[in-house]
Length: 179
Image 1: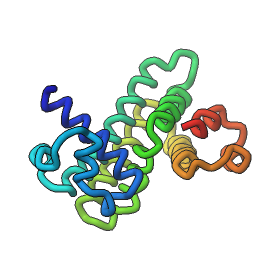
Image 2: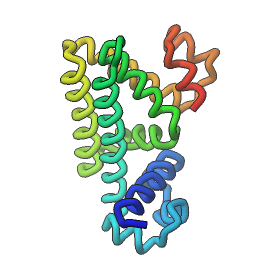
Image 3: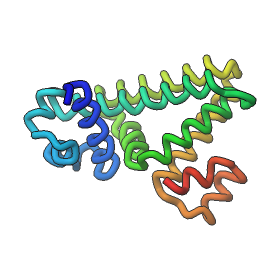
């Protein structure tokens, strides 16, 4: 396996483990075991655990940005924001722990380096949604707020009966709940 593929495998394992246990409680041993590599190899790839946390935040951001870009390019009859919303909902269904990792990033923002990575990630998603949609800031703010609500509902695995009043009759409700 190429180093770039192993790096991606370790990042996926890290996002899963960080989402499950948080940044500080998960060990690099657990991440290495999930990825099928040695702990020293994890450190050789990323340097420190904090560098791995930051790389995980950046990877999740990259996934969202790529999903939004592809959705906007292939929107068909949908508006760009509706297409991006569908793409984000799809990301929610792939790995609930990856989105919990995203929530941990925002919660750990008091750490200067993690906070910088989390802010950069969030602002890059905001800017891309604004640019790709061509909508005004108020519309994109509502889009981002709805996305945050979907993230929280999916991360908490709120049963649909309780989530429906939160999300309304959202077509994305069922897919977010099935993750």
